[in-house]
Length: 319
Image 1 (cartoon, rainbow, N blue to C red):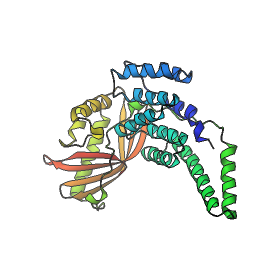
Image 2 (image 1 turned 60 degrees about the vertical axis):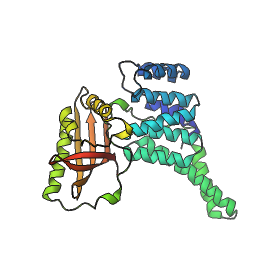
Image 3 (image 1 turned 45 degrees about the vertical axis):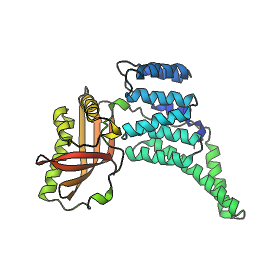
Image 4 (image 1 turned 180 degrees about the vertical axis):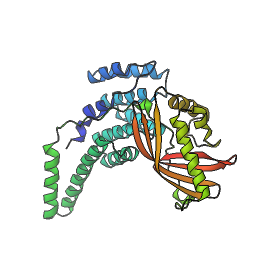
């Protein structure tokens, strides 16, 4: 069991193996952070962000440096913006939880870690950290119970057990996690959930439902084949761009990511289609694999008829 106040030094540094960019040297910035030279790391990151303000690696490193400098409010803004622009990534949520735990805002830390796990169910560090938060919340709850009823023997025993669990491992450093390059992650999902009331429950596959499923599978194939023009053609003219960006900015980003060097593979499983006239909702489990990044997530697509075919109007992780 870790003391959340000690997470910063280990949990944050464990997330720093990021891909490089043309302007930045993440390895050099990482070295500065590990050496405790946080001001220099922040200055270097800010200089690169002046030319590449949307770069996720640089933004992530900036959040790390701000956290280590004790500028928590600024770091929270950085990581919250990353969760909005890159909702499929678990690391920004985990780092938010680190800061919230330092502030003893354990309910916020719990919510952030649950989002990290929702985006990446196999993210072991988030599961472990969530266990720590639950222990801390349990300690607070048992303490409150004893304040209300000092003679509650059961609460006394449980509180003693939880406190022993926390204190016996309180100085243990967080378990390092496998590096996950932010820049390599597929980023296409909107942050807001689709309203459940707008679509009916999944129905038995019909010819129309099979057409929708075939369209979604073709979208995944175009992505896997790195056929950027075909990939973008699956999105409706009124596609809801995540993060409030312009359509052109989003398309330019997707061209760079889908067309990046190296092989990628996108596979879907457990595809479920719900139809409502000219609208469809498609739920599935998405697996993304590339030479330097693997991720799986539940995803929902809201689709509409456009030009005689089905097009994606919104996509959401989870939902």
